[in-house]
Length: 94
Image (cartoon, rainbow, N blue to C red; front, side, top):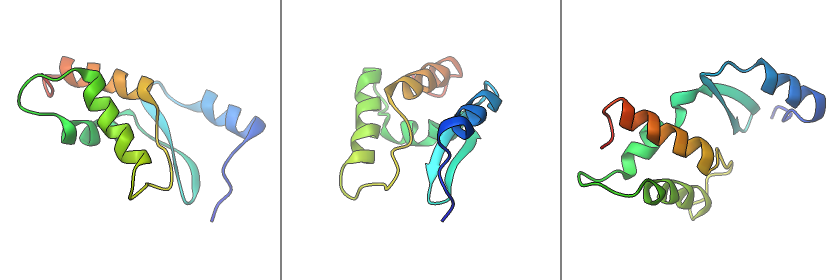
């Protein structure tokens, strides 16, 4: 198992990220992922009829922290909200 970056290494990793990348954590540590990393998970909770974005975001987060729990919390409501907006603008979520 790789070490998770912290301190100066984490700051260097954050500053090296492109604007179209996100940070995720897995058993091997902190890594960069496409900003679209969360899109399919968000879309899996979307219904054919309109829903409040907070509902979709809340269900994604609830799945992350509820049983069976994913061992690594992948993101907060802020990044998920940004991705919901991007999905709406791309016509993938209405």
